[in-house]
Length: 289
Ligand code: PAF
Image (cartoon, rainbow, N blue to C red):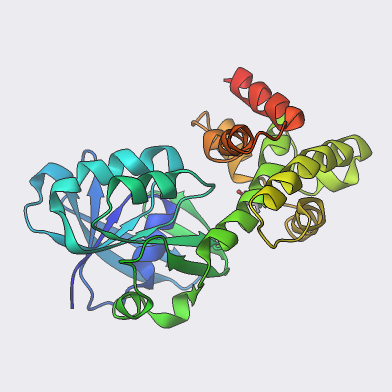
């Protein structure tokens, strides 16, 4: 059984470590490991997991199985930190939100098999050694390049943990539309997702943003539902949630705006489609600091 390496030991990194069977060796790669091992428990199951921790420059053996569980803005640099360990036999699963980081990594590592995952799993760290698996979601995974083969992934990722997607770009776009429609507005209005559909002013703002998103879906000939219809449904289903961007903002961490609205504006330039409402939202989020 090949060892599994994980870049990023936040909630998503720990959740994916917890998917592995107990006999599987799991290693976290960290910028500055404090300890040689890291143990955590997962609630509500009360399962215990023990992993080892390494700095990238300490590792010398090639990595065959790698999961990248960092924030989108750290993902490319994290991959570059282990570039010397990646070979033609390496398979990488990317877990980042938004769009842009997956494409940048696929371009930077053309010899490596790259898979991307769009996840609706809900998990957070209650403290540094306790992960709460708050909402069982889905992991939708597909190939970002021709090296990435469904059968190869099935050799190491338990099949009940994910569903294969033949067109991962469309799957990623669906989640991206939702993130662009909801996340920045929850920061601007400092509210839970549900408030965006309760307040007429917020709802109309979301509709304007979504009309521009739809123009970009059409320009790329992506067969997806209207962003406003989907975003409203998600706000209803996740009414009590504080979006990931609002959580980042409140914790004074960088937000993933460049991989959501920022990436949307890059596409808008590429397809020559004016998106003034999204540009305004992007500027407002940047100005919040
Ligand atoms: O980023 C998030 O918070 C989530 O993807 C979503 C769907 C907006 C729900 O909070």
